[in-house]
Image (cartoon, rainbow, N blue to C red; front, side):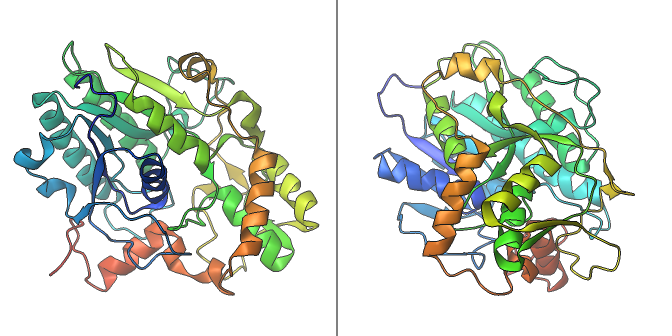
Length: 356
């Protein structure tokens, strides 16, 4: 990476839930950046984004060397979001596609000495027997999504050397609003349930631990990572120790903030979008609390938003926009269901290529 104060940045997957918000920040702060995206979720806007920036609509597999080599930093967001994948016939193959193209563009970044920042997930810890897991703790992924993230981390580890030092951000469970909104994220789903229906429906006993992270804070971490002068591969848990909660505790917090009631989802519920097939007999095996001592040391100036404060900000934001009446029944806000819809309607093929 060059020693310029403001390096030239490329953001891949710029038109998704994270990417849209990240690019708003980069634009607001005047960074020199460009973006690309396959644009699968062009119709998934919850509200308009005002930021305009240079973007190309291209598959990550089609990014040419002559274009890529002009950048100092590459932020890799393309991938399949975490959600039950039983509506895909070959689950592993779908995720293997993302692993293959991530490894391919990482090799190109290594070739041209481009800083590589990868969006991984704290879900790689999976079903954990210990609490306060740090970056050296044993990973135990239990979904195809989290196994895929760990596989990519290992690919990057093998590629890394003195000349190529990727940054791997293990991101906590996100919440918060983005123009390309996702309501398959627990807290955001609960919040809209509470506001729309005056009740939250849990499909588990809520006893599983999760670290939570406000989207606005995540994009600040990406920004800071651009300038991190790491000399070796760096894995960083992204979040705050104050935001490790059991699911039932954050659900009760939302109920209190919105004066709503808490119920448990029964088998007769017809809304498949809010069901989670990884929950069996009321138990969610995904259970992990995480330590964030490392990120506090690396980025001491980032003040992470508490879950309560983030939810309060989201409640205020909801009052400013008109949420559609059927927002929790619309597959465009539930990524893998929408992806499945695109495949069924032959908008994209089984290799996640857009049909022209």
